[in-house]
Length: 438
RNA sequence: CGGAGUGUAGCUCAGCCUGGUAGAGCACUGUCUUCGGGAGGCAGGGGCCGCAGGUUCAAAUCCUGCCACUCCGACCA
Image 1 (cartoon, helix red, strand yellow):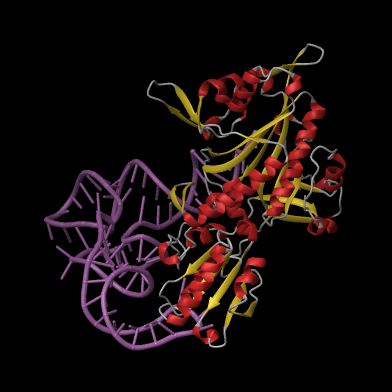
Image 2 (spheres, chains in turn brown, red; image 1 turned 30 degrees about the vertical axis):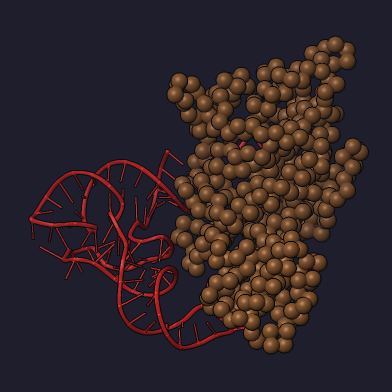
């Protein structure tokens, strides 16, 4: 993409409304524009990142055996009356009426809708287990939206719902999502620590929040310091195997959110305890028959009995992750995207736009990178070098290729790694191969 | 929902106290000189001063009401 033909409205100054770093950087990089409190438009650069994150989430969900569906944003109130949540949910639910004065709502979550789909089709234990997910916009009318896209009212969420015959089956479904989440966050370059979380009125120990540590996180968390050294890479997971030993081993290290942490009853000593702030990027629940029972989601067992299915739900905040990743990965100059979610792989900086030799060298590199299927953003603006460097550092692409007349005299361009700041000189002929090979 | 703020050019803000022709920097348009870390000159364009009402000869400025946004708190399957 040529920057002169792109839409990337970067800002030199920070808009006054943005208080935390990820929000500031997203506005400055021209990724989003606030439309109302907690409601954002996604501009081209931001949308690219959102889509990359979404695709990683999708791939890992599919790998775990879940199936993608797409449910609507607008739901009928009737289903929510069946589960009893229409009255319970409170003002956080955006309630609207259609032209016939029917009660509708903008979905804050989808347990009711998915349970309705499930119960309509599935009647036999033979059709279990099942896990359906979608990636859809949600709306929760928060009293106080803040932190940019990290706590918006409208947000993109992946929510999966598992259906099993009994607790043992549901536990396995839960474990599969647990492992899939580790793999998902790992691919995004994040260390997301699974922490025992509050299950609310349901009880039991089957709820984990996945938390990335960041100074500006909105919840306080407590964990064993050894978590810092744990490798959470969830590669090559055999989802049909018994995942319990792996998970038991991982979760043997203490990690709990504020509401679950009891300082008087903590299993590890103060010297081993890390107190930090975190951003919740995922949350998984087992909630048994809470919805299947009242909504009549029963299957027939081998013995011919009708049993309510055991369900779990599993959320990943896709739009929140965009902010979360920035919170976890930035410096004074701007964003530092992990390779897997960067909006472009490489930025190409022409230091002397209009100079024949420099232009042709850049055009050549640009064409070759495109042919090699490398996503390249070519800064072909007629602007000062400083402005180009500043913008390129701000938007945080993993690599920068810096082309100017000074280097070209010796057939050299500079290759800069954003993350380390390291610059190396590379011959003009080698640079495409170097970047493509990475 | 309680408390505290802020609304003036696309952005950052001054002007308001003490009423009297709407301002600066950046950004934008044209042009010239520059050009390896956010350049300089010249010439321009751009404003229901959040909205409504009131006071006054006169309101961005004073008064009242409303709206929006931000921060702290409570809330957050």
